[in-house]
Amino acid sequence: MVSFKDQGLTYAYILLYITLSSGQIFFNKWVLSSKQINFPYPLALTLLHMVFSSVLCFLLTRVLKIMKVEEGMTLDIYFTSVVPIGAMFAMTLWLGNTAYLYISVAFAQMLKAIMPVAVFILGVAAGLEIMSCRMFFIMSVISFGVLVASYGEINVNWVGVIYQMGGVVGEALRLIFMEIFVKKKGLRLNPISVMYYVSPCSALCLLIPWIFLEKPKMDASGTWNFPPLVLLLNSLCTFALNLSVFLVISHTSALTIRVAGVVKDWVVVLLSALLFADTRLTAINLFGYAVAIGGVVAYNNYKLKKEASRWPCHRFLKNWFHDRKRKCTFPAKGAGFAAMAKKKTNWLQRKEQQEEFNSYTSN
Image (tube, rainbow, N blue to C red; front, side, top):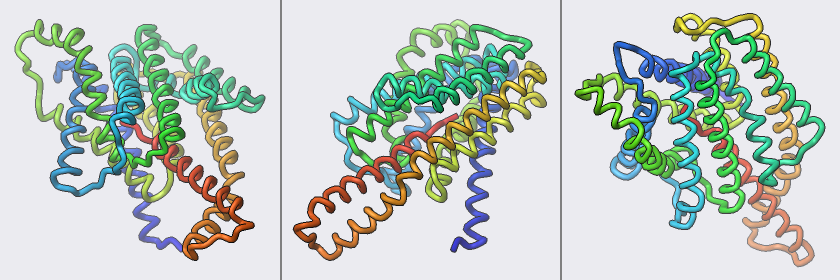
């Protein structure tokens, strides 16, 4: 039985995640659009986040050894799996942060609700998902809600919309690559290990376009007189957000992150109307977003039920297999069943790791 203290600690971690996730979005928007900060360089800001994350991960895992990095990474796995994931992660953060220069935070969050549709379509194309009438209906509801929310937007900037949708596609590709990575490679990595391996790769992917796209603009503006403490604090908050994801998953589950993410989205949409002058919510905005979020909840519920329908069998097989393993013997007539039990147990472990992978985010 879970104690009251443990429950309170779990809720504290969830509240910390929602606070950091919402606050980081507002922080990024303020840094990029504030005339006082004068740092309208989303590519440079994202690059700074990745470099900061790479350095801190190295210090925490290799120097101070406070946290453990899962072993088993090879050059083949890194270049065939981690590099594509890092590239898509860099693309997602870069385009998503750039969108804040053109559209409001609330509208950006509304557009992000289309994410399950992008993931599902790419999953079907990659052979990871199967089209069904129910899923088609759920995807249609989400798409309809996003379209209505977009129609209700007063100040639509299509450049910002394109940037945000590009970020959505990049995130969907990242999740697809992660699923393929887990299924084919079978490597188990916690979110800290993901940060350790992915952040340097993402930083390198961002460095090249920064040199050609933003560095000339920064040089032309004169002396690099940017507030270092603000940028350092912004990077630290990003790293703290990633750690909060690790804490929530380790104390609850990846599903909790998804549910907390829905709450966070509403918090961001409503608070942005109070914090930023460029945000004006309308009834059509809120209605469309509510429909889209309803579709997202239905999507998560459908995926949960689909997996839960297999769990009783998996629990039995997992317990049976470990019991037999302790006895160090399998009856000859049960050899086939033992092999099946081991196969099912490995599948369950991969699914659990896949959920952790899909929950890792920096936004």
